Image 1 (tube, rainbow, N blue to C red):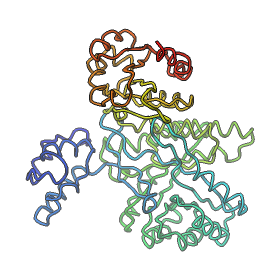
Image 2: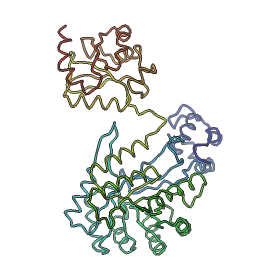
Image 3: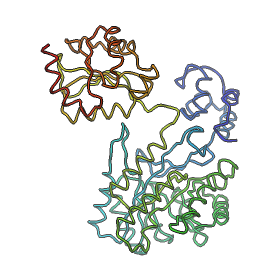
Image 4: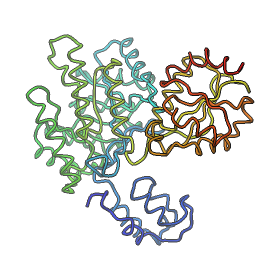
Length: 471
């Protein structure tokens, strides 16, 4: 049964049902609802952790465990969790653990180049409607096939970067040399094949590291290797069915789709593990301009993100490649059941005083961050009242009566706006002009209709605000 089909009543019947509120919820039914919706963890029910409730805990854990196993890479604050999926499509429940993006470095680089690339990977950052977009891991590839050379670069990595690592080589000796230095940090080993699986399995068990299983375009072999490794004692696996371009693209997407469907729809535990894609393969034997390879790698990565890949190994670090990918990932992994909203209330920009302008907007995140960015770019000293519209944009909120004159009046009163400014003038968005009269009647404030687009706020405040104060 898909986890999206589990009834809260089924779970509720197994819980201790003490209504102790130690989980932070009002009662056990409220806890159960959030538990089924993956908004709370099973171990937050403290009575369930008692020895006498052990059988109930195990029963619930088995019932609720994701059909795609969650695997942790790294340790501490920088741990990356992949997998943990219960559904094929985000609208069924939600996606968890966004696709991790790893950028590669190689042991053929000189030390300066190696360090510079590590630094650029660490420093990649973009703020997008309140979310921090970053890269997640470093894939250290052995292209020299020299165990000592690989180890020397691993040493530099350990001293330079705090990101989790993927150690990439089919040679167990090379992987061993890397694990000697950073095995305690739980890197992902890449990769076990039909030829080296035993040696790689021994390393994974010895260092308690997750292990990638690689069987290019052969799902039967992949499952056979998984069965063998599980019986051997390796528990945390990641599956790589191969990433092919050009004529092999259809096979790539089909393999990823078939594996994820088999795990979730058919409850096939042998394929219930995170999937790894390698868009970096477009660079192999690539003879065209680098921009073409970057483009090809980017669209391949975007396909794999939407086709269930849990981790990607990439080469392109260019902003025009990684920025759209991280935004795509962010959008896919935003909970579709909840509007993207910010907290309502009063925000301060610059150093306003009691005669500075007061504006308002809705709490739809994209609207708020756009308005905030335009105010900051214009260097405006002002107050911004964020009205709770249940995460709806301005026009939608006005049309759907989620933004009303009464709600604006209540927000002014609750936020004690009269203690912030003395002028009792409120600048409203131009797209809310049709309720300007209603706002004046409901609030007792003088309403000034501002620009239609927030990009016009700086000029409007500089030119029109002084006039309004002098009227």
